Length: 239
Ligand SMILES: O=S(=O)(CCO)c1ccc(-c2ccc(C3CCCC3)c([C@@H]3C[C@@H]3c3ccccn3)c2)cc1
Image (cartoon, rainbow, N blue to C red; front, top):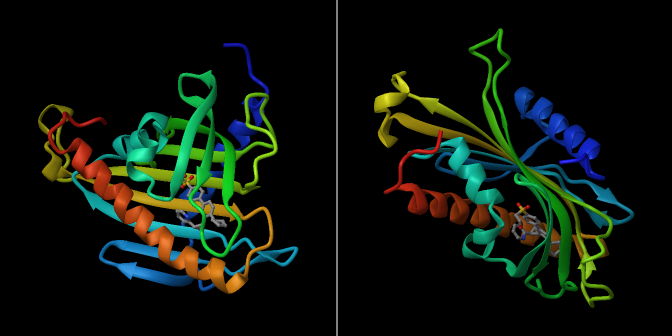
């Protein structure tokens, strides 16, 4: 399809997330806020114009599912309301291509903050390892990135527009290495990195927001990965 308005931005944002994922340097600037089994959730405390914009990074390892499956269910707008417990509504406003669409969603109100909504493009992409380096990382990635407006977006709602740059970046490990033919779910593990930069778009008490982040992100990641395990357990593996 002819290059759409966001074609260049999408490539730049995805490339940035891939570059960042390859480094995975969780240095001491990241504060561990949740550590449960294989899931570790970190934050950095940052404020912009007095608003909490804490970047969040989570790493998780889940057996029995692939990076393609995790990204497929995270990206697929048709199932968003099945696993995202904090949404009041979610809809697709536009399709740029078969792997890229514009979503508009309203988050459930988080007392005492004003209700939030989000308008963003979402793309799923397979980033194979570099040809010459067959041991290089092979990623599946989904990126959700806010856009300022869209002609089909509801106007003048009472909600505050949150601004986000979120990525779900996955690698699949097959152990022991086997030919594609007879790999079972016992042989696969998905290594997940989740990066979320959410600007609440308007003032909210820092203490409230930080408590919400600390509670909601681990809950969301647990619920989402469990959803993928449930959806895939009796289905052929998506590599
Ligand atoms: O991974 S996604 O792309 C999945 C698509 O939905 C995504 C996840 C979360 C958000 C998000 C948007 C707004 C807010 C706040 C800002 C002030 C009041 C609500 C929060 C706070 C952090 C807490 C939160 C964390 C996880 C899930 C829901 N709530 C999170 C946006 C996108």
